[in-house]
Image 1 (cartoon, rainbow, N blue to C red):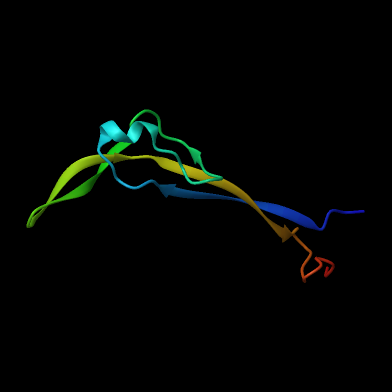
Image 2 (cartoon, rainbow, N blue to C red; image 1 turned 90 degrees about the vertical axis):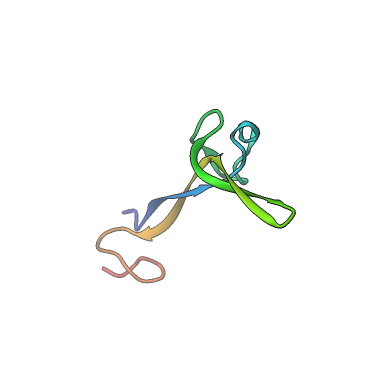
Length: 86
């Protein structure tokens, strides 16, 4: 019995929202995602604070998160909804 379904592994990346770096230490990734950055994260973004009539922007930090998920596909040489075609 030859295996007709081959799982294709996909990596989904996302970044958490930008926060003051000092507050970003405890930031968690969404459920199912793994945090790949350490400590306060990557200082590559700006966050905004509204002060009366002005909006001020400050350098901030965010974390990178990844999620691996398998997408079943037909193996090479097979096709169709049941992967039976050859």
